[in-house]
Every structure is written in C-alpha cells, then in structure tokens.
Length: 293
Length: 257
Image 1 (cartoon, chains in turn orange, yellow):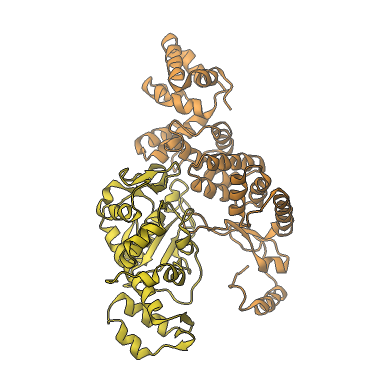
Image 2: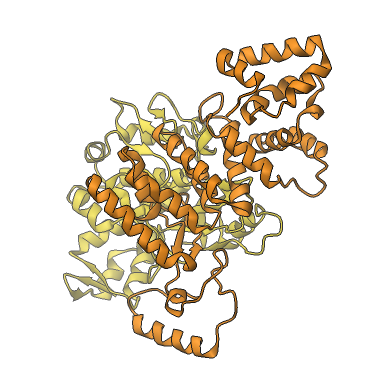
C-alpha cells in the first residue's frame, strides 16, 4: 500500500515517527522535503498524515496533485470549508472540484487498507467513502470495485460503519458490482456470507455446500439478467433490506437492454413492443406493481 | 373498510369510540372509508393500533422538542450513563440499565445525543411503545436494545424497516423523501425518514416538522451539480406490524393509553 521511505517510517514508527522524520528532512532541506512529499511510492495515508505538517511549513502547494485532491475530500467531509477552498484554489477548480479517475483510483487503492487515526470515527475513512462514491459514479471498473468490496467486508468484520460506502459502491450501477459481492457468499467467514446475502437479497445458506449452490445460482441469475439491471435508489438509510440493484422484468420480457441509471431502453420501443408490453402487464396484473421500461 | 373477525365494523359505533379531531379518529376514518379491507381480531386490537399511532405522532413532536442533535453516524454520540456507542455509530443500552429509562433519557436530555434521521425514527417507535404498554413488559421485551438505522432493529419492530406500497397512508406512518441526485459530498441528504403527523406535516430529524413541499425544497438544496431529478415523497410506508405488537403487548396495555 505504501512502499516508499516515508511509508516504511510510518509502518515502523507510526504517525508520530512519520511526522518527526518529515520535520527532520524539512529542517535539513526544504527541497528534500518537497522531494519526499512527491515520492511516487507515497500512498494516500502517508500524505494525509503529513498534510498538516506541510501546511504548517507552507509546503502544501508542493504536495502532489493527487494528494491535494485527497485532502480536498478530507476537508469536504470534515466540513472545513476554508481548507477545502484552499485546496480547490491550488487545484485550479473554478466551478467545483472533480477528482480525475486515476487520482480516485490511487486514493482507494493505497488508502483503503487503513481505517484512519481513530478507526472509523474520523474524516479519513469518510473521505475514502467519498472517493468511492465519485469513482463509482463515473468510472467504475471491476478491479477497483473488487478493492472497494474488500474494504466493505473488512470494515463489516470490524463492526465499523459501512452504509455510506455500500451506497457509494452501488452508485456504479454496474452489474459487475453484484458479481464482486457474490464472491463473498462462499467465504469461510459467516459474517461475510451474511452481508453478501443481505446486499444481494438472498437467504443465508445453512452450510458450505449451500453457499456454493447459492453462489452458482446467483451467477446464473446475473448472467441471465445482466442487460436488465438498474439502480433502484434503495439504500440502508431508507430501509433494512434494500435492493440497490435490481432487474427490470418488462425489459427482460422484451429482451431490451436498459440504461442502468435511467432504466430506459437505449432506443425507443416499437409499437409492436408496446403492444407486447401491454399483454405482459395484463398477464401479470394483480401479482406485481407497475414497473415501467 | 374495517372488519372485526370477518364482520364489517359498524361505522356509527366507530365514530362514538374515537373522539372527533384526534389522531385515532382520523386514522379510523381513513380505514373505514378505504376500498381496502382491514381485518382486526377485535375492537381492542384496533384500539391498540390507533393508540400506538397517536403515540407515534405525539412522540415525534416530543423528540423534535427534545434538543436531540443531528450527526452523521461517524460522529454520533450518546449519554454514556445509559448507552454505549458502538463502532458503527449505533447505540446499545448499557448492561443493567433499563431500556425504558434509556429511551426516556433521550427525550429528557436530547442535547446529550446526536444521530441521524433513521435512528430518530427508532427512538420515536420506542417512545410510543413506552406510552402504550406497561414499563415492565417494555423492559422485558427490549432488554439490551440497540439503536441504529434500519440495519439493526428489534424483531418486534422488524417491519418498520420495510417500505411497502400501501392502499392508504395514515398518521403515524413512516414515510421517506428520496433525493436521487444527492450531492455525493453529503450522502446524509440522500433522503429523509419522516413520520406523517396527520395534519399535512411530516417530522424528520434534522429537518424539523414541515409540509412535504418544504422538505423536498430542503433536499433539493443538497443535490449534485447538474442534477436533473427532484427529491420526492416515495409511494410507500414503513409500519410496525401492529397485529404482532398487539400479540406481544396487547393484553397488557397501559391503563391510560
């Protein structure tokens, strides 16, 4: 996660040792301090911990750009408008900060293995959640979704807050998100299985053999419905058993792929399809609510 | 329409049973004039539901005035005399503390607590039950009570976490204003859990007691740049399973309820 010199210092001596090491470098040479901050091996946690030092030394502008985005996320979640604005100015953002894909990916990939100085009660992990929401909304890819899922399950095992993270994760509106979660059905840890089943709307399997069956069945379902998956808008703030992503039965009946965010078909339905849809709705009338393509 | 043991209820006796202008009367009128069928085992079971609905509305107003603060789960806090804060931001009654005393403390000492809107709904339900059932039965049922959002609910109140489309919406229903284009920076504004107060207003912790249009306007202020969708009141409600609660507590209602 953080393999550079400062990362090694943090690993061996903790945050206090890291800050002391950085101050020693800065005392020796301001130029060396700038170089140390810009070591490409630095992960987000190291730069998060050093940002206040850099600010005290007037070196915040020397932070690498991706760290500036990260600290902007932290300040935003902390409600520190002045600090957030300062970083927005340094980033040259005139009408809102929009962190780029590789930056968000770096924050998530190097930052997700740490819970912050107070383990889930500070603005560090809130900023990670925010990075996830930005990333998932715009750029979701399967590899990063898998990394985010790892974080969800790790936090869950520790009993930490996961609902904003889960919400951000599913903002991807990506069927791959379901596949990534489904892998945890077969986990040896029952807490993982329980959470995976909750997120996928499945019954908790009774034993290992049932876990494998449940996973296979879900994979088959996903394969069959992938083109009809959409973001429902359900989440833990509103209900206890949200289906963040679901499939549209009418779209499936017509065999028409839909946009996962708008739930609309990519091209308008033909008159034949509209007629077929009326027949479908009439046939299931009284058994399901009116879902529309 | 209301049925008792499969027989249509007498509207005149219902009108006499529930005084005009009260929450019970408003609820009974909606149920009695609905095209949907509402079956109760006895008039007392209906009494129980309506009394609990009234208590939910009353407790919502009391919670609004309690000084309870709004905080996100990461920063949630509670009175350590009665509650332990869990790592996920939820609260758990301290061992040895009666659940009734712990819930009452939130209402009388609201400033010592900070949490999100979903937790406030749970506090309303527990407060309403305290007003409706004997304290001993409450403490027995809810020993070791936990408060969080809809993720961790007592089995007795499990159904409050489910949102279903209903033929009628009544005072005391839990409703939800959704904000589909919420600003990513403020997921706490992704929606508002509210109680229908029966007078055209809704109580939501963090927003206060306002009509639906005002709550929508508040949520709309917290949308992402370029948002195209407005906040809206979802066509669904979360309700306690009143029949189940009557089964648990009904024979032991408070004399004054």
